[in-house]
Length: 166
View (cartoon, helix red, strand yellow):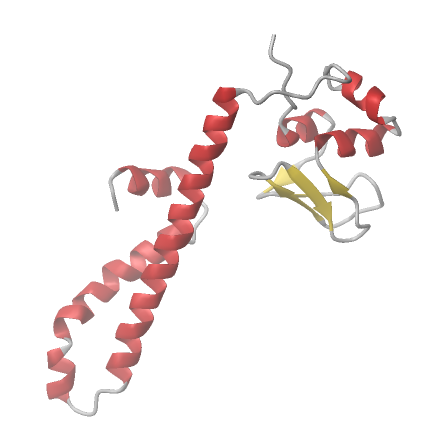
């Protein structure tokens, strides 16, 4: 049997912490606005109000006031035995990280290209110069649509674009 460290987000959900876009109400102080940020890639949390931070084991230790060994037992891990990486969970994390990296890089490249075209148009002094840029001007609309999609929240549409080789 593989002894692996539980997923932080799944553990937070089981412990009643409601997350929205990687942010949640910190259970370690009276929190009215989400101040606890969850990093999916590193499986860590950090509260910007009270300073609580760490991984899933630290979270359980602090939440239930447990020792390290008791937190391991609570999570169903064997104390003294290092957790082994679940290859399926690790592959999912890698794929998600690759997707997020593609999204950031594509968004940044589109914004950079859009800004270059925009500033080129602003430097034009007459219609002849604008006419010379007409081909790239036609690309601005679709480029703006792609920027809006990538900066949006609809993961299914973004993933569809990713799979289509955008």
